[in-house]
Image 1 (cartoon, helix red, strand yellow):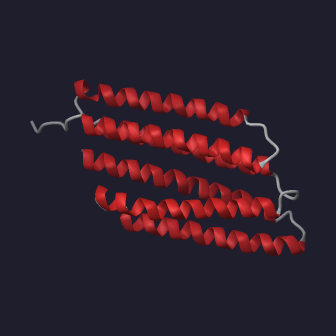
Image 2: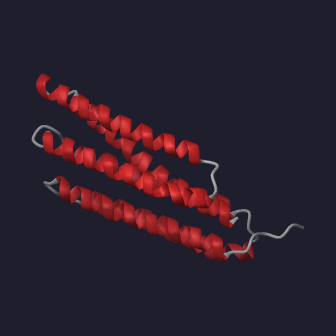
Image 3: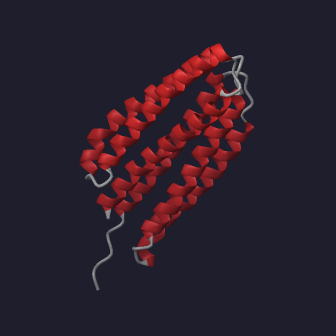
Amino acid sequence: MPQQSGMHFYLNWAKERIEEMDAALASLEDKASELQADSKVKAEKLITDLNQRRDEFREIIKKQVEASESVWARTKPQLEAGWTGFEAEIKTYVDTFYQKIDQQGTFKDLAAAQVKAWREAADKINSAASEFAAGRRADIDTVVKKMKADATEAEVRLKQVAADSWATYSKALAESRAAFDRANQAAWEAFKRTPPPQPQ
């Protein structure tokens, strides 16, 4: 089970990033349709680059789905670099079209994707924990409850962000993402501490 929970940790981490990438692309594609012709061409080029980065990220994940925890650990820096590149492209897009796009709308789309990933990860962890006997689940149940509470808290905080700069939005998203990663890590650690069920 610790091996499986390690994979859950990496898959949850990757899925959260994919959810944000998909939300960003959908939002930016929608906004690009509102731009003037000269800006629209530039926006479409950036969106094409973002799609390519997302697809490369997704392809790396597909190759690792059944991999061991150690393979995931070696692959994660490559995924982090891909994520960082994607974020940099988003910033380029926002900087380029700052006056012409609805930044708050894009932020809300990304925030919703994060919250969705939180909730799905908590459900997945709860489902994986069902294999344990009731006495062994207490630690995992505590972590799942905290993860769900943290997701609700993150949702509230993200809804309260009022800003006029992408830097403020990015900071709020990064803080929420870091909290998700800590909660995901805590769940993984709880699985590692909980002995697997013994065959009957």
